[in-house]
Image (cartoon, rainbow, N blue to C red; front, side, top):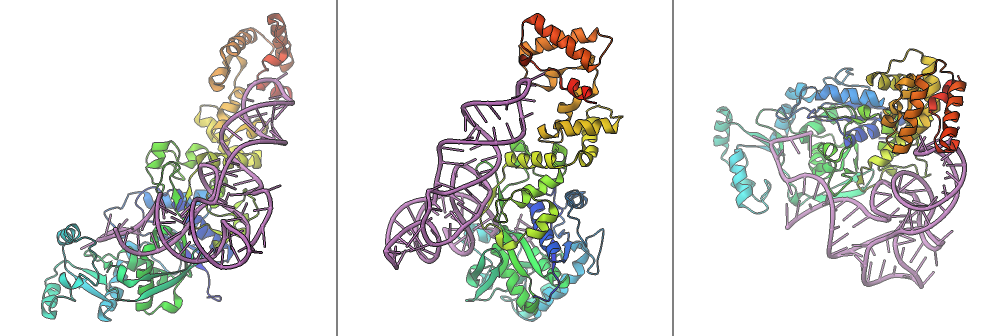
Length: 470
RNA sequence: GGCCCGUUCGUCUAGGGGUUAGGACAGGAGAUUUUCAUUCUUCAAACAGGGGUUCGAUUCCCCUACGGGCUACCA
């Protein structure tokens, strides 16, 4: 394993937007690959045609690009192991499934969905396995000649793995250490569906082998099916090349319990997707920097042990380690995510921020004509912005004439007294011919004096200071 | 129900047989700032419970409780 080239894959299903957990899984895979000068492969697991969602595949690719963790091999950038879409690899899988049947490690099953539903309903703790398989309709329980007839008649059937009795399947997880399962508690999973498509279980093993994957990382929800995969690697004769495993902890809902789902965003008012999806704002649309988004995701379940929290992508590549990933699930905290963004905005140069800020301003109807002026403004206000979208409220008056000021609208915390005073000042300013900052300041002070107020009670609009310094 | 995984402040976490159990976010209180924000100081806040092992356990082992995941011809 030490001399083996590191190859990892991120293998999502195109069933909708790519959410937080998916992006984090992709990120960890990417970091591990880059750290070992290996390959990061994107494989599309679209074996369930019922759940296929138009545009989801492109969305996944766009998300990874936005994050800056572009795959080395994918459907749009195929390497030598193409195709990278499982639906296009359909013909490959049957051969392996048949081979398992031939070897006695799998069998044909003719039970209908209705029959199985009935079993599950009537028999407590029913599982399609060694206890009940002989009572069901499959090539193990039926006479050979009847099986041949059913097959010849093209009666719909699936191929199931035959889980052995009384064995212990052990394996090592890079995060959790040694683990094991008793085969008596594992059921005969379907390997090949009636439509000829493989299930995840068969496809993941065949493809990881064919694509020479050295390390298989995935979410913790896959831990219970690990024994099926382990057995498959063994039965297919590839045990020596089996990848090393790691199961990442889940990202949980911020309130209550359970793993974070795509619906939680709408319910709780924060994004769960990287980019906008299906009308819901993603982290991008919400005003997050990809650097901050990745930084937040990386430290949700991982740390380098030093207390450092801010990491750039190249730093993560250098310091990341699978072993330091936590074992327990972590609740998603939007407040902390925003803090990371504020820190990254502060860290970023005005130059780097410029295009993004410009886009925010323009989408709010502010035309930016002088880029240098914009750069100056960004430097002045970036410390006070948490989200990119804050740049509008924080800078809008720099782009307006005093007559257009409507400070209370963008400064909701102003109280009525300040608003009244401000409007009065605005009225005075509107009658001025000279908008120079010196003149504005003079007028402002005069008004304050007339009101019997100290200068500290209200400050001059920010614009005056900036223009004054320009 | 069965199987599997997990359990340190509200949240993310560090630590690890002997520590005042550390940091960050959020929260409280102050200071600075011509409002706000930033910045700074400061306060409050945790080892799920019970048994072992040990001179000593939050740390190692077991049990319980709790949480989560899986239990589809979905991934």
